Image (cartoon, rainbow over all chains, first blue to last red; front, top):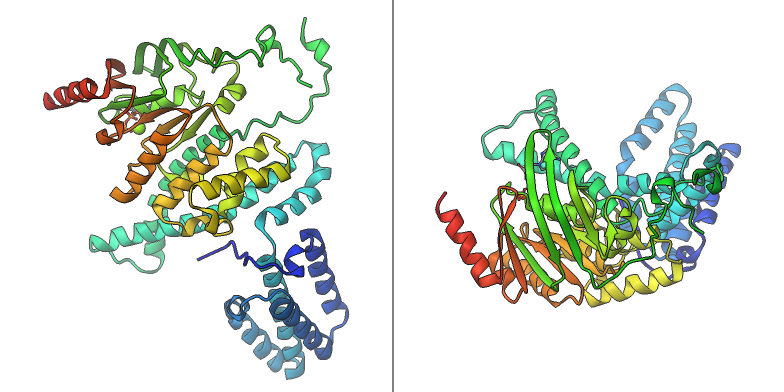
Length: 219
Length: 246
Ligand SMILES: Nc1ncnc2c1ncn2[C@@H]1O[C@H](COP(=O)(O)OP(=O)(O)OP(=O)(O)O)[C@@H](O)[C@H]1O
Ligand SMILES: [Mg+2]
């Protein structure tokens, strides 16, 4: 499983500023809700596919994977609307969701995590006033992206180790017997990672400026 | 501009003497009642220093003292004359650290981004960062993986990546804590060759005794004390003799 979905290519879409792409995504979402028609959603979907496949030259599989991930949601929306309102609304609502999911996939696949995080840090900049360090927010996001696959792998390993010794719990029990050892590993790892961050100079950046004048500090 | 903190008065960060090496003066480390290291007086100025000893003898604690990850409960550790207690930032810029488990030291999702991390911390401008990252990746055979997710690399490649992330920061000295323990023979050999070929001073904690061939000095640590301090041959022999009695 991969959370870093970046697909390296040299295309205009890849070169476009991450902020512009994220803004585009937001605008698209607003438009899709402001113009609630089947035609608008269909046109938007065609547009997203054109940008993703033709302009950014992403493999069909990358987008297909994202569509498959939400297929049951799409189906459920369609069915619920067909039963409560009508099929046309159902089709429209599911098409809109599909369009947004694919648009988000195009943005993630054409934007490096770093560039994306830089935008988030920029958006967080005003929070500096209340003592938040935007770089830390960015680091938290990238680290989550980095460690979710690692944790999934560790969980798999624990399950395999238990299975090797004859344990094959299912359901809630499986959850419980995996979570306790996983938690122990996660805590150990969190300690190791914090040491590694220190060793690589995570604290090298001086803390946010102090208000007191330096001359007052030296007696 | 650098503001002086009250504790830092009179200790100028820029005064470092690279000829002094790493000095441990009367160093002891205890956790509660447990004495983990005791009475260590050493100057490490050789280019390649090995550290061996039984499990739990204090090797990792010793290694962590050298870049200020652990501050000694007694005595002091000086790196090029800089005290790890008061000048830890300057010390960490001079002493890189590579851990046993590469998974714990790769903090960014893709290879190139991870290598760039330490440089970002040092405030290196983006263009220079890109150049230095590309250079290090190329030198260590990771150039083709720049945009790959780190967790899809093999164990050996992950450790290479972890080392690349340290080398890119150009520290004068690098401490390795069992860098080859989790690797297969081929990858362990590869990492060992890399370590031995580095131009930096290296301090290597290891259980892989053949890695120490050609080292300038090997310390044997036992129950928190340095019990042997010699060339690799005699040191390894002393270590084997020590372990034979247990
Ligand atoms: N933070 C800590 N708190 C309490 N005890 C600790 C701490 N760190 C290490 N120790 C103890 O100090 C002793 C030495 O640990 P250390 O990790 O330095 O050994 P080591 O020689 O590296 O062993 P190994 O070969 O197994 O890696 C161990 O008994 C350990 O339990
Ligand atoms: Mg150890």
